[in-house]
Length: 206
Image (cartoon, rainbow, N blue to C red):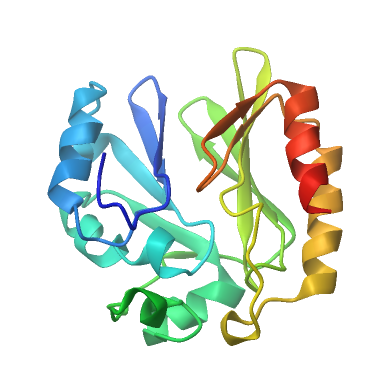
């Protein structure tokens, strides 16, 4: 466990080629590094920090974590990267946590609706799903003949202060529904297993 304010942080390891999906708020970076090592992964194996969106509980820890994961490329959609690089405390929702977000450089900015990242011998597909934030992204990977979807804030919430868009959110949920994921790794609801259970979870927010 890391800081209670953190959204879920997921570790992907493909034979020594690793990535983290999101970085938490940065209040427990030391514990996060210990958790990575507890999975028999060395920090310098982490090649990507795959940020799902700009909100503080997902991205507030990037700057400090990047100091520990020196090989990692920070990736996010360009529509959210601007708020991370500016250190915007409103759009990133840092103010909701009584905090400020340290600006940091986004190394790889997704600019299209779908983009592929190579991780070892596997591909990770980054899919733009705006609505919760302008640049929300989910990541899809095949593992043991199952589609694993890292869809952090499928549940929302929506708020004009964080530039949410209700119409875009509903359209994005419809898109997620068609992906036929076998496993959904969500940011606050844990891991949903089974294609029908994943669909039911997504449908519940439609």
